[in-house]
Structure formats: C-alpha cells, structure tokens
Image 1 (cartoon, rainbow, N blue to C red):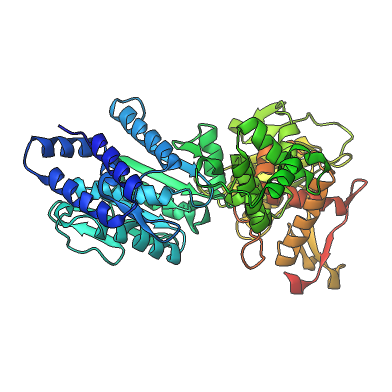
Image 2 (tube, one colour; image 1 turned 60 degrees about the vertical axis):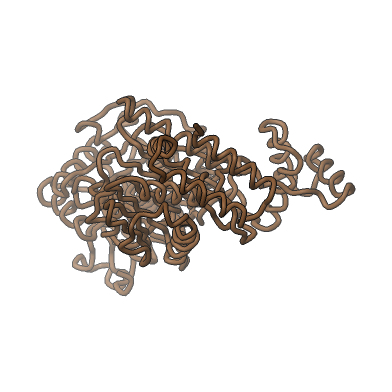
Length: 568
C-alpha cells in the first residue's frame, strides 16, 4: 500500500517533469478518489491525514504564485520549518509536556505564513468534525485578499468528492453543516472581534498593526478552547503592543513561543548578476566594504556572507531590495529580531540611542524596597540635597495603567527613586507624601487632570504636604486664586516636555536608572497623522514632568509655572 508521503513525492515528481496544471488536476482527481474510497488503502490515507492534516495540503491544494500562475501548494523551507515546530508542539501538548499552543512569529515580507496557516485551517475544517478556525487581518483589503486568494480560490480547486456539504462558502466564511465545521476571517478593529465564538485554531495576521489590540485579545481569550492553536504573526511595527508581547515571550513572562524567521530562509530571495562586470564590482564592494560609499551597509553584507553563510546571489538580492526599500529594509526584511523592531515604525525618540543605554546600563542595586516593591529607593537621602519628582496618576484599576513617579536629585539629575504600581488615587497621594518626606520634602509635580486632583487633595489636605508644584495664570500672577495646584497637561505642554526629554536623553543629561522607563520610550511613536500619543506610557510622563521641574526649582526656591488660561 502507498502512504501519503508516497503520493506527495509522486505529485512533486509529476509537477517537476510537466509543469502543467492540467496534468496536476488530473492527478489530484485520482488522489481524491483514492482518499475517499471505502477500502484499506483509502482508510490508510484518511488516518494519516487525520493525524497530520498538512499532508492533505501537499496532496491536493493549489495556490496562485507570485507570477500569478496556479501551481501546487508545496510548502517552502520557511513554511516547513514552522509546520515542524507546530506539529512538534502539538505532540508535546498531547503528551502533557507543554500547556499551551501559542506562537508569536516575527518575519519578513511574503515568506508564505498566511498561505500555509490558512491552508492548514482549511484542511482541518474539511476533515475534522466540530472544528472552528478563525483568521483576523489588520485591514479590510488584507481580509478580502486572504479570503479570496488563500482560502476561497484554493478551496474551490479541491476535487468535489473531497468537499463536505456547504451551507455557504462566501461572506468570508465557510460552514460545513454536515460535519459542523467552520472557518472564517474578519478585520481587526472592533473590541468585540472574535467574541461569541468557540475557536480551536486562531491566526492573527500582521497583528503588530492591529488597533484595539488589548480589547481584541481579551475577547479572544474567552473564545479560545482549551488546547486551541493560537498564532500571532507579523512584520515589526516599532515598539508597540506586539513588541511588548515579544519581549515578554523572550523573557518567559507569557505563554507564547517566539519564533523569528530571517529573510534568507526563503529560497527564492536571490538574484542573478546581469553580467560579469557587475558581479566583480559588487564582490569588491562587499569584500572591501570600508572603502565604499556606504560602508555601514556593505559591512553588513560582509557579515552576512562570513557569519551567516549567505551566497552572492542572496547578497545581491538584498542589495537590490535596499535600493527599493531604503530605510524600510530592516523592517520588511530583517536579519535579527532586534533590528526589525529597532528600525520599524516612526519612533519619537532615538531608539538606537535607547538601545545603547539599555545595553550599557547595569542592573541597579535597590537600596530599599517599600510597600511590596511599589517603591524602589535607589539612593539613600542626603541631608543637604534638593529633590524633585514628576508624578503621573492612573485610576488604580488592576490591569489598567499604573501610577508612576520619578524622583531626581537636583544637583546632578540622577534618578534616586521610583514609584510604580496599581494603587487608588487617595492611597497614591499618601505614598508620594511618604517618599517626598524621605527626600527632604521633595518638590512634587503631580498631573492634575481626572484622578490627579484626588491625589493632590490628599497630599494637601490630609497629609499637609508643604512642597507642591502650582501652575500660575501669567495674567494674574499676584492673585493666589489663579494658581492651580499640580501640573496641567495640554497638547502644547505635551510636545514641549517630550521634546525636552528627548534632548536630555540624547545629551545624557539625565542619570536614568529605570530600564522599564527606557523601554517605554521606545514605544512612543508618531501615528499616520503625525501625532504622538503617550497614553499608557506612565513612566515616560513621570520622567518628562520631572525634567520640566528644572525650570521651576532654583537653589531651593520654587518658581511657579506661568501659562495663560487659554492654553488650559
């Protein structure tokens, strides 16, 4: 009897010989009949396919390639690597050696993950009772493309004898009612995406580009069945939610397995030289990179050749992509995971500078922990020193933003302490009073919007804290009634404090201790309209306000902020 491996090898051999989709269609028809036949051979095929559904893909699936030709769907090297990872994980899960089937894939452009993962889900939907698979794309155009190109077209080419009874196969969904099996796709963007479903296989496509990521994942967490396969794949998009998820996975702080696939793992990413002269010139540029007009890039090519073993046609392909993609090259065709995140998106701060600081900054020894680690004291108070603090205020709800404060010594702008945690506003006011009193009644600048006012009221009325920052109306500076307690954030003041914080980081004027603050800096990016949001960047806000206090504290004397009412 034949095995499924025999059939796959036979199909590949026929394709290599004829390169004819009509001949392949005839072969697929005969294989479909063999699979569905009620005999020992058919039973063997069906059993092997049930155990490893990917085999059905290479037996009967087709796809439209980059040349717009219909060809058999034989998995490429990258697809095979991930398939092997996936099935090894499934085996380990079944043996009780792992508790989750969650994967984060960081990749380059057009390496074939969506093609394979969609085909894997369709294969399972065709052969598995009560299966529910689901894909979520980052935008409507991608959603339509995945459904038409990677799902509906390949499914429609499957021999009819292999197809379950369809209730429908449109509206971006397949439903096979006789086996109660389904697969669908939608666009990320609404907080209810994926809710009201029970899913056994979920694929998030380009998930680094999703809006409302946290809300979507919260809903999906309830929808995924025990043992469900969850795959989030994407190219990098700067230091955002996906980067945070990736960092936590690398540090074993979540249940995802991080998988990075270099661009050169895709075999077709290579380019022939036009002639011998061009080849000779290119090789000379790579070998003598320090003498060229772009030494940094050619040094990288030299490294890829010597350290990674890339051949000349791969290097030449990458060089030509550089001409097209310019600064987007590391994002779309990264050589390392770090490079992908570092060079993608449109960061507000110099991420290369921040990365160097993170590498160079040693783990700071904590002088004292207080309140279960919410307070970190880095340096003991010095009797004759002045201190200031910038304080960001959150609502105090578990799982939401945290309240944060950054304490600095004024004489040299070295960070001496941090407050960071989930705490109710009134209690946060008492914590700030405690740390402020310890640091010689540090000058506290507390954000005064929303819950900030409760913190300020606690500091002033309950704690009697004597050294609080006030914003003063410049038009009536002698009238105490025009003074407003706390730091008043405005759109203008936001960009002012971010710009000045950026300059301070670039010029190394701040003695930063907090690595988590530096990581948050990487996540501050421009949106498509050129605006910057610092929502959720509580440590960034705290340090930025603290740095502003250098203007209002001179030789131990408070100089109040002067702004017009019209900017409030």
